[in-house]
Length: 170
Image (cartoon, rainbow, N blue to C red; front, side):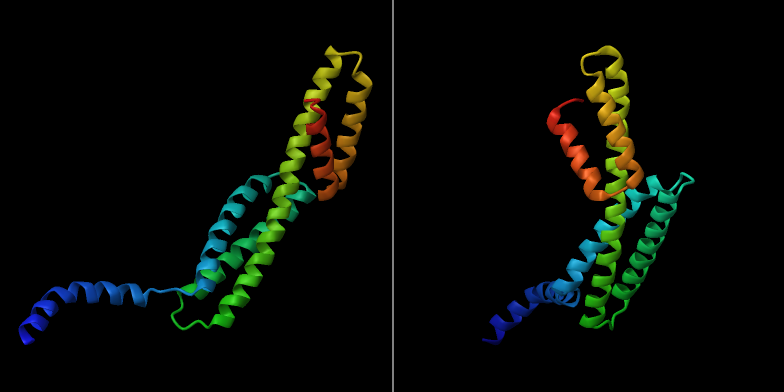
């Protein structure tokens, strides 16, 4: 029996070390979720940076959302790096980062829709010169686009974008 045990132990240390290493780095599902949220937040932050350079109100809003998001990402990473964080701290950080990310994603979605509608407007302007029959319809959509862009209402932007795509005017 002792010989069999000794043979087992001569092989086992590698396995035991490997198992103990994986056990010590085991993360809770909340920590894993928070890590995924951090990755998504960083992607959102990188995309939103594109819309912070112009000197207008929307760029200032985007910059504010971006700054807040980046600060929350840093504080969340700092919390995760601490060895003695509690589950309540993880949940609180997740909620805060989730809210900030959602705000930044909404700003990003608005900017993306505005870019799409601006492209449609450019196409409509070129198309109305070539097609006199649809000139009135193009002018109507150009006016709608200008109005919706100036309001910056997400629902209106989505609806007009969808309407134009469904009509296949582009």
